[in-house]
Image (cartoon, rainbow, N blue to C red; front, side, top):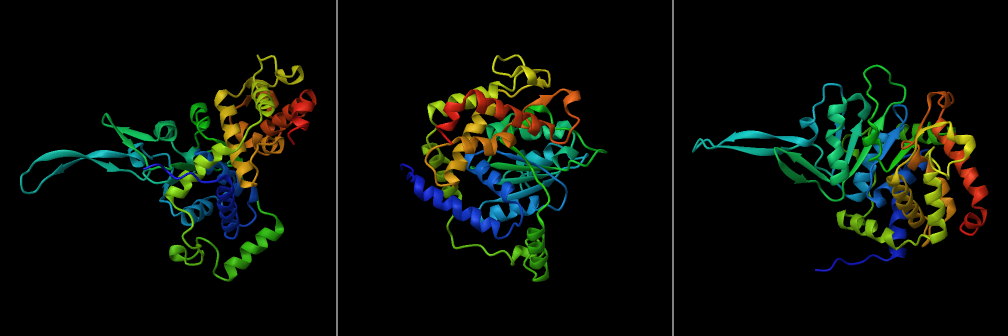
Length: 348
């Protein structure tokens, strides 16, 4: 049976409704909500860096409820083992016959939305257990590959202020995250809404079973999410803008001719081809969220930092200021806008 194709207009309405519904439960995190939705529609994973208590965990729970998807959570600790995440083969003995057989016991990773909480507190060995799952959507145990649910998305969190007992994520794993979003404190009005919701016993996560969280009528489902991911492919990317995105990504590499001379000495290594693919994918998703059938330069500008900040590495001397990667990317954007002025101006 052929899968029904969802129109771009219908998909845009559903995504906009999802954003509105999630925003009614998560206050003061507009950027995080937008980037998480773009990641979901792009079929990728998101790394969230921010202080504790900024609604990162609540966001995943709200997503799962509104999308009617399976939700799982793993608290990463230094003693966590790979088998604690993906599962393991266990020996079963039949009481009547005494027959022995190994049976795979699924771990918490076998869900649609997985919250990997404080991922940088686990050892590299344990972090590597996610690599196959994030890239191939499978887990291999005892020589047998086990397919993960579709869709499958990892929401990983890390605390930037932890120093003891923390392990930086390997570059190979960082590159598997579609976006790296920085979660900041809410503004004063949003924080007041949080306090009001708490006072009225309506704050997400503060009641058993989340009775306080209103879920709309059945509008989203696993199949709907799959159709949204496919509908995103209908968003057009102009060839001129595609060329500018390519130049932008290549400009992060110090040995490339597109890299500005005044920035070349700041870079240790630049973003690989997966960065351009990721940026293009999430820009299509953002265009869909805005109800546009074409990717514009404003979409690239909005998402280039979360798409690239974890894929470039600056030399030690360039890391003195806060968010040095974002400052560097902003300099690249200005350079691209000056040198590709006509191409960029035509697709604002």
